[in-house]
Image (cartoon, rainbow, N blue to C red):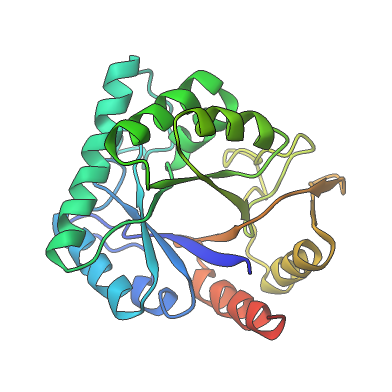
Length: 246
């Protein structure tokens, strides 16, 4: 059964982002910001407690050290630097989770780090190696694409399992990658269109690109961005659909 996930815990200090408490009622997995692109210790703790209350899985959502740019700008790191910031963020979220009597079960890189990981096998390998050195039981969530087999083989070499993800509220290019947020209509808000897209994926196994090309994808989890202005309605609607086809 395809699970539903959302990127949450993305406020910072006095600034709130999204409607985490409501969204967590409808998802199976919460990707929680770890402080580098968003989130802080108190926000992380509150999000963990809310996830525990709703009995949903939590995953670390580490990003580049870029609060100003919300982690959506690429930053060049040496291999050991990148591995260090990833483990640092995962460890912070896990420490807070354990203090709440809960734990994390997977990792999903955020924003530019996620995109860079999917475009660059060296960065992907660096991330997988970092996870392997920390805890091989943690799974890695990645964009389902034509690279699935390549990345699965790399991950397998380090003893890491993958979770394949598709985005419900982001436009796709013909090559199976996401349309840049810098372009118009890269983020989808039309709930009916999004549900139609989910139905197509669940029933026929493909999603359409911006030109109408059919992209056949292996999907374990569907993502709705928590900062989408229609996130709550989209999440609730997808949940109702997924439950109807169990």
